Image (cartoon, rainbow over all chains, first blue to last red):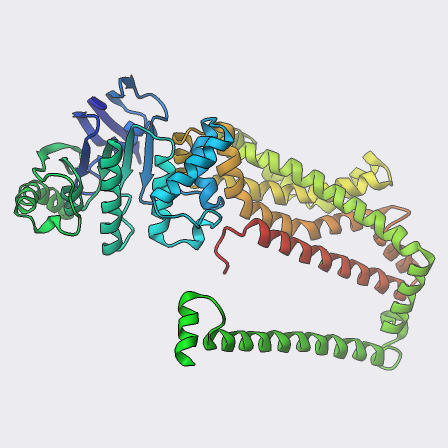
Length: 258
Length: 278
């Protein structure tokens, strides 16, 4: 088991009122699994992800990752968000090298692994560019190289492709899928886009609106390798999408009504 | 031919017709600005020269020719460098001390909110005192030598740099901090790779503003009591109604200030090369 979540909950106080961001949830995520969290905004899907990353302290329950309880920043994961977490003042090479530097990897090996990783995400030749000089898709690939270079067992991704245009999004999905299949990492992928979730994941978890809790967990019966450009025309895709949409739609409507 | 140019534009090698036209337009504009600047300068200096003694008493405004020959005389005597060097030295020292202390304290306060909240009213009170009003006190403490001038300019520079550094650290995007820590960075890494670079644009703005202030601080110190420096020259000449020397001193200050500003702008462009050019 890669991630074991038992009764994890989050409450906080805002303007003198207690807000239940996430009611206690239980979830087991198998090693090598690609799992997606979907739900309306404010349903606690990002909250749960951030608790696995150790960024947000829990107000109840436990989470263990690779057998170790999460308390404080979890350095065994790779973390990628919609906002560019690539440091704008470092070049592409320096950005990808940073985690290895932090982890005390010797210089020669650092250089070798960074070069290898940049080749993997098709960014060879851009080593000395600053992120501002790259396109949005290229910056995403830098971020991907940055989290893959130190070989974490688990990738936590919070709407990583949210800001990209539709075609670019599909291309990034294809690249992520092929990397996932080649490396066998566990991926937890938060998105509000149900089609993206069904395209990528083994299992899709639907969260209900505030207070957040898990409403439905559905296995996607499509086999891998999947082609993000074509998989949506598969009848099994439609069935899975339909079932999940039936669970998700009322939650979104609930959010809109408030 | 046209097809050739388009291809060059598409692959970015060579100069397409559009790029050449844009370059030409740009350099024409730059030439116009340069010529305009020279014209404004020449007109102003000529008018000054013409009106001095004709429209306004020479005693009040001197004249460009008298000022430049006074500067030339100082240069030959060696007194120019004698006075300029002491002013520059005090300015640089005040700038370095003030910005170093301001930067370190700014980082500290930015990181520890509670400390910042405790000291906030005192900092605000100190900040509200015109630093010039401290000059007499510094002269009592440090004497009429260079130390009191350094103290005045350092106290001015300190606040500018401190407040900008503090604001810069508070402005850091928390995503960068979280991501860096998950990547394996410790507190020191976060400081070195996130806090300081992120605050850099604020800090550099602060430094750019504070260099002229450092000069102001030094000159004010020299006005009050000294026996060397540009401020001393101006104060002494004022006492003797020697407007030529007063203007010569002012010209020196203007030139020095302008040179420092150009140097800072270049430093800024290089340090912030990762940012989008506006």
